[in-house]
Length: 131
Image (cartoon, rainbow, N blue to C red; front, side):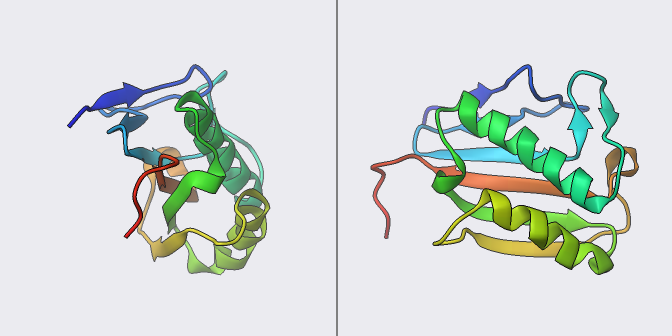
């Protein structure tokens, strides 16, 4: 298996991990909190603004790998409050289209840097066999 790290200057990691790992067939993107890559700080605003920044960070990583949201097969969303579920959905549906990726949404006690949302994705390269 080929294993290649994918990164972009439009993103930022805050620990010992890769932004994404590309296996040639699949792209596994690490969870993205709403960091502004230019400032290294969380974006200001409500959970919708935070979700938008997380998704823009994911978009930049997908772009760096030559993929798009259309290639995403699985999403996991982490929220510090399930009360934010509907607001995050409103932003999320702007970025994805049918057939929607499989998805899990999980409530957690806390996220890095005090973020309210973190989103990770798995994408499949075009032309790869699907069961």
